[in-house]
Length: 213
Image 1 (cartoon, rainbow, N blue to C red):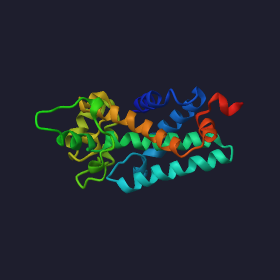
Image 2: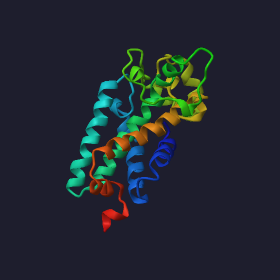
Image 3: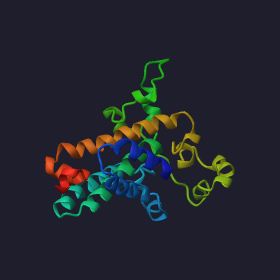
Image 4: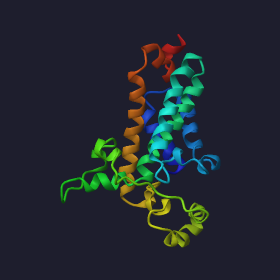
């Protein structure tokens, strides 16, 4: 997804559970994953090139950094780790065919709204039919230049990131499904952490007023 969309999704999902200070660090760490250094050689950051196991492991690795960081009073490091894992979780819906698979499982003639989509359907999360876009460099890089995109994309394979991505509304009506799924997945990731924290640890993580009392 585009950086501005990652930021919007993160704020929408977490704006009511984190302080403004914490939220901005989370958002900054989220969108930093799309810097050039995070694009080259880091398929696990974005669920690219069918790197499903590596991406899932990356999410778990970042989640595992949060509690130790809090225990060492490194709260900004905890927020940064959470920002990084939310980026990867959000990209799952924009960079894979999960949305297509979910819609294909619905009753014939039924088109559920984006709000009805299940972002964690157990039959689809690990489905052998799940695929993510491949990056065919160097030509794929040219698709990130708006003026060149329409000239380059027709020559790329249909399993390329350029064809498969749902990174913005320009990609058509399925983008809204990916967007809504990413919002709910982001909140799910917070809820998952919340369930394992004491009230004091949670207050520190959220940067709530109680944590400064």
